[in-house]
Image (cartoon, rainbow, N blue to C red):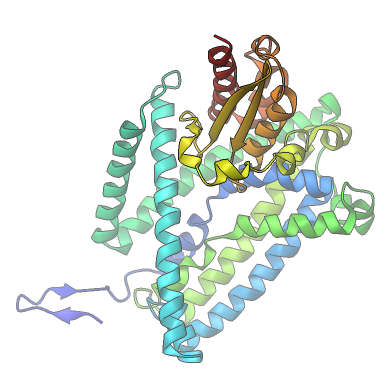
Length: 399
């Protein structure tokens, strides 16, 4: 609740500060519309091929129904503490407190991780050919965190306007890629094809990569696309018509995102022929589940492993020489399927090989596999760094 000081300045949340438009902006700006598509497209295609838009649509409809439930709860009790205030009143205060603390913890960890990556990406944009030490990356990330903290202190109105700026830039860039993709698909070059209604049919699911099981697996991945739309629920004490606008914004947000994501997936999956999609859509990702677990002795001593600092995610490597051959152990987080897939591919090819054979592995392996265009320069740099570290270890062991 707001308090009034002796100078008659209002301290706390400002009522009636955000219109329905601002509520809607917050709903769609918190889902990272471009990066979420980039992270999930390969997995969706790998699970269910051209039926990916159907999975996106089904999950979007489910999210819209959830947003209707959130809207009903908001009409009951608009609150800056939603949804844990709702949980506390509907069940018990203890459960509500637990939900709130869990929300704070997960949000903090997620934001720290995202901002750390933002520091890495910003430095890469400034100097794409240079690798910075971790302290430099952390300092840049800390500066970004400071700017965001200052913006949050300034209030919800400046935050909304900054989000509008991000949306214009991000959606403008994505729309330009959509236009280029549609032009390419209209030409039919390389087997590309325009979006088709058949992608939403049961026949497409049955004849796809994974059938109904693949569709279900793709639906699970689709949940990542929609993370964040519920952020508007915490504007219940700052929104105009709080019992109405917040709920409407969440429903408008999920409805818009359902249409937007379905459109993006159906466009981008058509840039290659179905034959190429089925043949190569999971070449790297298929290896993700084959990376061997760390030996028991290393599980208890991960600090003895060497970290590949150039990778945006924590990747650890150990190499030992046994009877003239190099034996590797690689540790990659399970929530990084592309890196795990590439690490498993390298492990399968280089584990147990002689140092001479490892040295003969081409440095531009990622380019030869066609990963540069599929994954982008930054991610390929991390993959290449792992390969080069493995080659260097083999050379050092043989010396």
